Image (cartoon, rainbow, N blue to C red):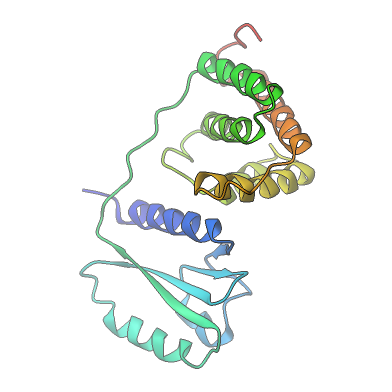
Length: 221
């Protein structure tokens, strides 16, 4: 049986990813951005940055939360520009992602640089992002076994000290391009210098992993 807490967190991560791809910024848990009328409810998240703004609630099927939702809707109706967004938790869990080997990561880094240097900036960015996610799972074991939003990956690695404030700003900028491209907004163009700097960040993370003793030796790089 799925762990209810894990299931809720995974559903919230998926919903966050969907909203971030539409241009929203999502804040989980308690936040100063939660309207005063709603703070006593402790909503699971809020999404801001576009209209309408959302209060997000993950509700487990059969939990008897109808009264809570009814009251939330009543209070939100008093707040112009806000809507309730309900995510229904049926207890399903996303499959765990396999961890890449150091050899696979190193080969992918070489491939990403070749693609980038050939002038395929968007393709280089998407491959680089996949490497970034693979490295994240090795740098912070047990944290990213299932698909994550770009925002959460960046936030977690920054809080753990793996990314500098400058790295964080760069990756948040590139995350918007990445989200646009994978959803067919092909007019969105990544800055070549930014993608080159992203690859440098990936090299630095790979070296951090090597120094930490948390993976195999660098393979032929």
